[in-house]
Image (cartoon, rainbow, N blue to C red):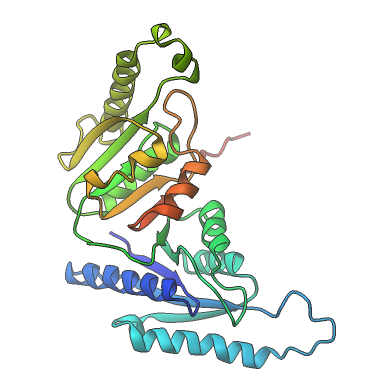
Length: 289
């Protein structure tokens, strides 16, 4: 259950889709008897170069306010959200507002534009996901059906385990946990040097062992474990999975699986036809002195 959510917008079509996705999320939670806090925000700033001081803050602030007014008028449910305006660069402003409100989920569009200021450009969603210590949902311009299974990428890293836990806590229905594997480059030149079956078996054992640990000994009945020989970037986007959303750990590790490197998350968030929720790894425990 998401108890608080912040959606960051500009005046782009992608922002409207992100606001609509957030409103649907809030509506669904309320239908379950929950009452999540919802915030809609935008950021505005002067152009980088204003040597003569000719730009006035007030018109820029008014334009940013109009962005919120327009989205509230267009997207049902957004009018009930709290509002926030920030002066400054978008990514730090979004993270600061999320910290101040202690929200559980940040929502951004995968692309944006801003005649007002530098609000949600493509780099902003990447920067927020990379720097935030809270889950970030990156919403594409078309989101597809909302009632399909959740697809989680898995490589046994702390962030991947956090992604599975997040899906179990916040997503209804089936959860397909996908572990991708591939042969080392050397095997391309000497196929006899390795056995594909060994890599597949190792991947399956690692996935099942990790899921049992995450679920407290027995794999949750909602989980379907999938081991797939593929590029990890493509495995979680396989159309045959029929996913309504993808959940990824923000940072993983390489090794045999090679799944969930920063580049994998960036690729999936940029190319996914469905929302991608990026979950940060858990903070390491404090070390006493």
